[in-house]
Length: 317
Length: 213
Image (cartoon, rainbow over all chains, first blue to last red; front, side):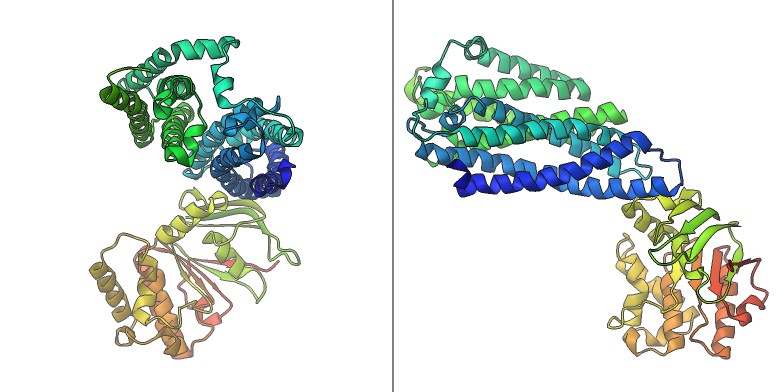
C-alpha cells in the first residue's frame, strides 16, 4: 500500500537510480583498488583516471542528493502517519515494523558517511596529482554495503506496513522505559549534551580538529538525545510528550527543521574537518569555525525553549 | 620544456600519433613538419593539454600535463600556453579587441591593464586600427594576427602555432616570420606545426621534428 504514496514512490525511483550509479562506482572502485598506480602512463591507467573522474562526478551528485532525500524521507513518514491507526507522526510509522528504527539509523549513518566521502572527494579534486583518489575509492565498497542495507531496509519496512494494524504513537514509544539505552538517555541526556559541548569547545579552543571531529560524533548523538528528552517537552509544553518528529509538523511551526539543520550542519562540518585534517595534516579553519558556530546555534536553540518556558511559567517541566 | 615519451593518441577509427617522442628545451623554436594527416595538430593539442594521450608521458614545463584533471588543465593552458589555431577560432561577433582580451577575462588583471596590453600587442601586429571591428569582418591575415595577439596576451612561456601560414600570402608569411622571430627573441618556447617550406627553410627553427610514420 505504502509504495503507492507519491513521496515513497519518488524515493523508490531515487533508490533505483542511486543503486545503478553505485553499481558502476563499485565496479570502478574494485578496479582502482587493484590497478591504481598514478605514476603509470599506460593506456590502462589513463582509462582508469578518466573513469575515476566520471565516477567522482556521479557520486558527488548522488551523495549530494542523499541530503535532501533524507528530509523527503522524514516528510513522507510524517505524511504516512495519517493513514495508520494510532500514529501521530513519523515516529509511529517508523515503529510500525521491526525494520523502521534500523532504517532511520542507517539513513543517518549514510548521511554522515556521504559527508565524509564528499570531503575526501573535494580535497582530492583540489590537487593535481589526485593523492586521495585511492582512499576515496576504497571507501566506496563500505558505502555500497551500508547503502545496500539501507535500501533493503527501506523496501522491507514499507512493504511490511499493515494499515489495518494499530501502531504506537510517539508518546508511548519515547516514554517506554524498558529499554536500557532509552532509560540511560532519558536520565542523562542533558549532562551528556553538556559534556559533548564542553568537549567540542575545548577541542576547538585547543585547535585540535581531529578531536573536534570525534567530539562532534558524540555531540550529534547527545544532541538528538537532549532534543527528545530535554527540549521537546518544552516545545510541546507537555511533560509527557517526548518526540523528535512532531516538531517537524506545521502545528509547531516546522521548528524541528531548524534544530536538525543546525545539528547536522555543525556536526557534519566538524566531522568533515576532522577527516580532512586526518588525511592531509592541515586543518580547514573555516570549516571548523562553521562547525563551532552551528553547534553554538544548536545549543542556543535547545536552551531557548526551556528558558522561555521558565521565564513565562516560573517552573521547569 | 616540452617532453613527449612514447606518446600514442588513438581515436575510434584512427591513430594520428603512435609511440611518438620528442624533447624541446625552454626557449627553443621547433618545427613539427609532416604531410597533412601525420598528427601535427594532435601533437599540438596534446602539448596544450587540450586532449589526453591514450598512453605515454607528456611533460610541459615540469608538469605531467597528460595526467592533469580538467580544472588544472584549463589553468595550465591559461597560464603557460598560447595557441594560434589553424582556423583562428575567433569569436566572429566580438570585436577584435574583445577577442584579444578574452584569455584575460578569468584572471584578476584590471580592465585598464587588459586594454593596454591588448593595444600594445595589436599595435605591434599592425591591427590596432581594427580594434572595434567584429572579428568576423576581418580579412584572413588580420584574423591570423588577431589570433596571434590573443595567444600572446597572457605572456605565455610556450607558444604553439598550428599551420599559421595556411591562409596567408607570401608577403604576410614574411611578416609572420618576423613576428615569430620576435617571439623567439623574447625567450619563449615556440612549436610550429607546418608543412610550409617558407617556414621550414626560413632558418627560424632550432629543431625540425618529422612526424611521418
